[in-house]
Length: 147
Length: 147
Length: 147
Length: 147
Image (tube, rainbow over all chains, first blue to last red; front, top):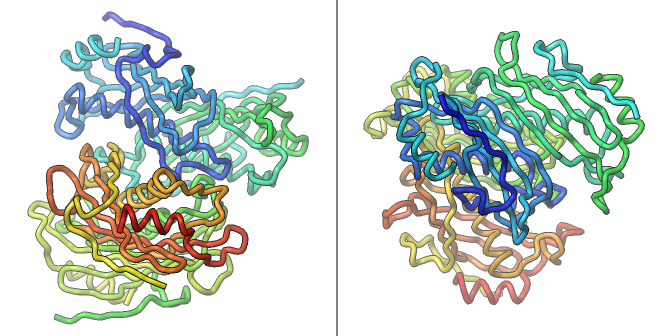
């Protein structure tokens, strides 16, 4: 089974899909920064949005369910409301039954990402919860758009 | 400068501090599982609770501010409302200006953690945002309770 | 059809069920207060907890689904982490197909509530989404515990 | 002191300001509907966005702080991810020291609102927390744009 690996790009252009995640006043904590937990919400939202809107995945009636097996984030600069987070998505590694996404989170006019993250989805059968191969069409879409 | 490293224990007893994080009906997503983002909220809440309640850190008027530099989580089993998450905390590595916490998230009667995570805090000066040494009293408290 | 109406009690003892809702560091906004939205999360969590844990309602496989038709909250004093919210619940009005809950939210040693709220649930058939009568056993439980 | 009252309009055009609040996969609860608490987050976000972006209010360094004294929402139809909520804002009542906002929450192609809400802000001095008059410029902006 072929696999591809890629590091997290450090510019917006390195990501095949970008989604603007609006921040909210109540995301700022008492330090005046968006709380670290919100970055994961931004990453999770961006990946699901791509899977559902761009790749046509049906989270409820599909034959596969994407389950998060691992995630991580490295924070370089703080972000504050009202700045939006522009989240870039690419596929860092496409395995047989799993995909590891690489994400860059950008804000304002900064070229460099405020944070970079990774997120591994395992595709499972909704009934047995056993890993199943990534659908062929999804694999092709990932390679075309996010490789 | 002395440093200590420890892996994430796989039983509740391996963690010097444990906090019960209640789940909520609206934490369950349409798959009927607590969303992965909530695990980070549970970890962040547990660490801050220990810092504020047990170690006497004042997040607003203290001379140091703890900033999240990196975090990660590996998910082994799903959790669902109404199960609570019991979050175990220990110090995996205590450096000069940073602490890396190791966390185990347990639910129900299961001995093995549903997830394990790590979280690195850098201590900075609230004015300059430059790293500063971990306060001596905090270091002693970490070593006494979470080593 | 019998109906009962009651105002929102102003002391903790006036509520037949009380649930302690823990606050979190990131619930405090930049003013250092728990954001108003969190009060609704506390009310929603308390009602669902009572319905599921105390009244045995099964939100997914039950013959009725409780849908929120209206809610409101009046805020008297601000609350801040690390103070917990103690949420009191009683039934203000029990109709044929709906219940209006009255809630009091208390914090610290204060006798008077920091906020009072109301929340109207309509019971519907999960398939047709048409209103259906409140189950007899639930009505009896409400009258016994929350009247 | 002049006061103006207005009911919640039932079409999008009745609101002088409209903000599109994106929903997220994890906003859907196990019933497949956006949880009622999220509507309050949408309303709070829309009002603060207008105050900060359109009316130039500085939430941290301003001479007034807007505190939520009461809020309510009536839910007519459910909303589900991936539908966005378009939130309409107008001023229902402008008093001496407070404003009551009327909000309509719309989704998809529906003409009628999925929900309507109200939200009362009291303007207070950040130091004393005593009510203070609405700033003259803010009052003029409200009357020009949201009346």
